[in-house]
Length: 250
Length: 250
DNA sequence: TTATATATTTCGAGT
DNA sequence: ACTCGAAGTATATAA
Image 1: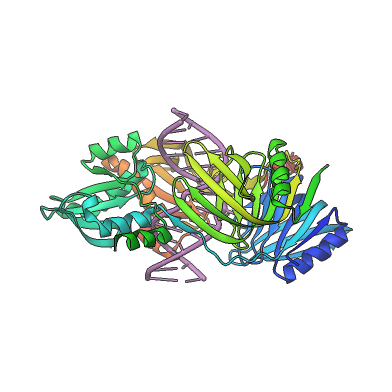
Image 2: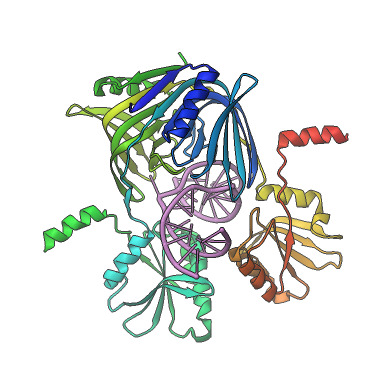
């Protein structure tokens, strides 16, 4: 069966269903009043309240409150979950190794326990991140400026990796820092650090921040440092759609 | 009623339940085969699969696959969700303003639709982050070393905010950079930048990285720069537990 | 396994 | 509304 649902189960019934769900590696969804204690990289305590608990087949464990995107408590994939009864009450425990972390949940009252055999082999396809901008510039260098030629990508320096290293039409070195979203002062500082690596022979070395937009403070700092800004939107075309486009042009 | 559950509802029934759930601002949990398109800061496409969909009363919208902690698609709190029927099919749409973002979900088959009036006024109480380390050092400066006196906290410089500025028993300035987790090279670089701000009169200015541990590379860089490392675990006692401790001592 | 950098980061605090 | 920095960040990738 695709989906099993139990409304207001007894602690014992909930226990049995959850144990079987963990064993069979299905997606478990619980609506319940619970409290939680976490100890690991940090430590936390969550007092009783009605929440959504999710146990995924990959070991992911989440407690979601009725607000925010992030779970209030969680464990990452590959964590080990088990349930147990103590003093007539139902508990859930999720343990992670390396780092050692433990999340313990006390179920005060379960309103819904449900198991779902979710079949899903598709991965998300995304476009519009920094990687795409880099691809786009390597393929179409003129987007930076006429005569620009990329020399290296992910060029390693002591200050970190330079996104794109190239030369302009005069043969001057150009250090390019990419941001897929509005660039802030931190991006300018980063670019500045790369340039410092070339300080010894800085004559003619240009630093360029490439992003869809830039904050006011960042632009001021950029100008003070004699660096440049080039506005560029990340390519937001999905790979599947790109195929269609290429077909159209061929 | 605390919890309403509908198994294998027709598209129309699911539509009515979801619309009412949104209107009444309850937590909506859906198990369904769906596909999704997102457009906003980036763009994405998710082909059909069986997933968990959550709509929270605060406007949060999430699609969870059977793996990973993060949702595969989502919208943040204050987004506006609505559902609609088109060609006999059920759709969900979540829109956010500023930045303008849109997530559209097509429900191919709903296996479970459930509404939960979750009462939860408790917030998570956490201990063990950077802020706690700062508090601890301000209260007990000797944790740094004998004779250490804090002078300022969050001291503003062109290179950013120095976590703690203090003086040692000889009156030399000490710049302290805090990390609540293992410190890497980036933390050393950050500390180095603060020290550069004091380079003009650097005689006797010390730089100290305070963290529970440090990576090998970071330690090497630290030593090369003549900086110091002090091992310190962040205070991991919950505020509620601290009260008990104080009572015990008073 | 550890270290590094990105992310539709999210979230909170300050301006 | 914008900006900045921390987070139990999560996650992918390279070393």
